[in-house]
Image 1: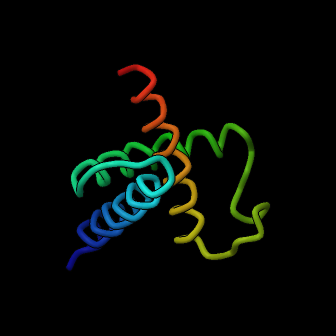
Image 2: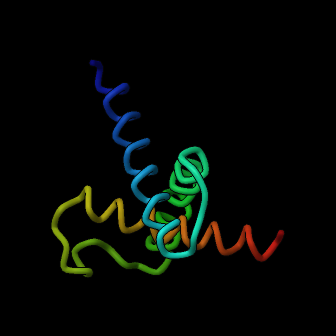
Image 3: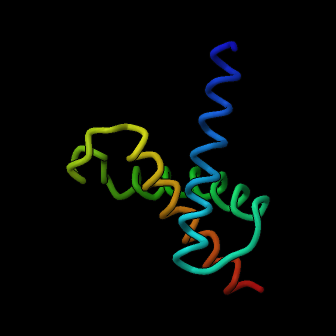
Length: 87
């Protein structure tokens, strides 16, 4: 497995986990919906945490994978809430 394939699979897995966690918090649908909200949420969460200057170290978490899942989950929650407000 090449590095780009492995990176893509990890990104999709983080998006799926984040979308699932977001659906537990705000309610949600199936697998595709979780995956899409998680992937979009990863971008939104990364932007939000970067804009606010909050890093994983300041959260007290040293595991980069856990930090990415937290960022993506918060972003997915924001995305789902904005989508519900618009619809």
